[in-house]
Length: 317
Image (cartoon, rainbow, N blue to C red; front, side, top):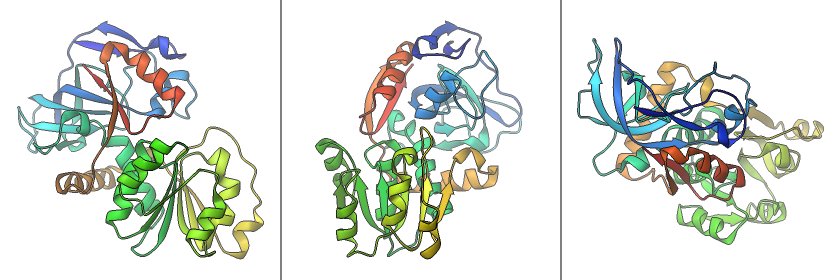
């Protein structure tokens, strides 16, 4: 099979296509013939060697994919050959024509959902769900600011928060991004730095929850925008930031970090079964912005670095 194999950390040019042996499923595992592969920002950080936990070289990048079950190992009882599935694995191996995953990490893909959309679920939708409900403890009737709402995680968070009965304010820098946020269900949209507008929308009370995609730029300004007992959940950050700790004291504010890599296996599976139901019902509607052939994975990573994409970038084997 063909796969992207990384032999050294570095720029997008280290993403090179190779011909390697097909993997074989072991006990409790399935072999998936991938039809679409999701590209996530974290894969760029890992590729550069700038992530907390790095894989041993050489490695095949990627965690999100969708395709068809080609073979099953012994003891597999949840899936069968020919099943349409999507998968998200908390490791690597998706940038390939075939991949092996544990059956508990693969989920049935509804017939009406394309493989490209299936490959867009894993990291972004999982991060959005965990940030909102498991770390952010969002409840119906609250107001949430999704700070950076036109990206992959942001759009999923808008859809999920709106369906859960929250008032949603989304921020985006471009007119195109702002329109996409509104189209996905946000009641209000603002520029990233328009905190005055956020206060106006909330009648001066502030928001109950902020889902923050770029904490190194915004965290210090987020705190005054929170209501009493408000929470900010950090989904992304690219550097350090200075804050005034006293701002957290008077209103008893919480700053919470988040990564789906910390999820225990049972919580991980429960969350994706819930997301599958949301996908089938139409609550969750992944947006694919661009497609690249597998051997042009480097172009996909260049696009990630440039930013500005509305929705998910996928690779097609």
